Image (cartoon, helix red, strand yellow):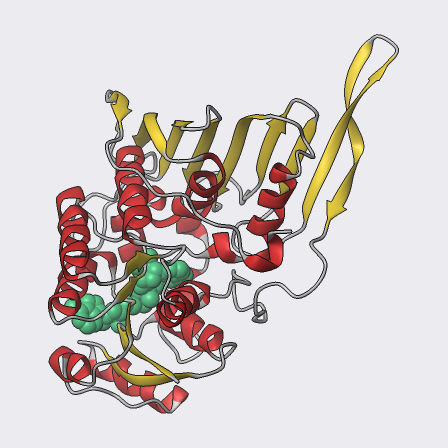
Length: 374
Ligand SMILES: NC(=O)c1ccc[n+]([C@@H]2O[C@H](COP(=O)([O-])OP(=O)(O)OC[C@H]3O[C@@H](n4cnc5c(N)ncnc54)[C@H](O)[C@@H]3O)[C@@H](O)[C@H]2O)c1
């Protein structure tokens, strides 16, 4: 039986509790939040033990800490846990400053501790189906990727009515302060890195296009960002994030022999389709019919749809615990988390005049899941 300690019991922590329920042999050693009312509501709803402080939680020596605090707290909480000798799975981003992310990576490496960050959807069925189709060369050589993570005109959405299961409000101010690229680019970026290797160069632009002023008087982070990403395999990807354009989470991979399509990155089992090209008389046409690809057999443990997402948030923690039990490296590791953070920060902070940026960190090769490897 593996034990987990939770720091931060807000909106996303409820998704984690539903997701953790899909895993056998996991117990909650304790949960901690600086907001004691929130901690109490969470403890009561999920019937889990509350810790008295972060030190109290660390003292319970869980096998893994889930850092589910707001991004501004990620660095300090993860550092305290690593320094106390505990493995950490952090919600994204690993840190909001690159130097802080590098420091966490260095501490984890020096202490021989596992450190990883969300998202973990690369371990789910949709991503693994796309990846297997690429390995099976269903579209021949992949050349170009278009990935969209547009979330609709967020500020006019009824977000004040969005509540998690145990009653946490959706933290709109924090989301706008942190920024849509830092919050969301990772959902497709992790897939791209696993499938096509590390990002070596980024040419990006970002802007706050809504003229927002946050409740504390500060300016919002960019509400739009778009990047061309140059990947080690030679594939180039264009990734767009916004909280302005209508909801669109599609990714298309264009290859010599066809197109791979997935419609959603916030569902682990969104359909994956392949579309062929045909020559009809003197025209090249993309087939109006796309064939759905299925892996067959059991894939990842499923959670039901909750709110905007049908993701199993526990796939990352599960992978880390399995790696530890099996004495192997985790598919999600500190190198991947640092690389992801460097690329996402490069996209979000590009502004209107940065131009081309060289990425210095590298992720190691990620192995496909055994149920998709064949
Ligand atoms: N809201 C979503 O839909 C969503 C989805 C996926 C991932 N995430 C990620 O999850 C993380 C948390 O987001 P959220 O939506 O749950 O935010 P939230 O504000 O609802 O919850 C965060 C909780 O962390 C607590 N906290 C902050 N600093 C702390 C500290 N130093 N010590 C202890 N507790 C602390 C806060 O009191 C709060 O209860 C973020 O990294 C976010 O990117 C959020």
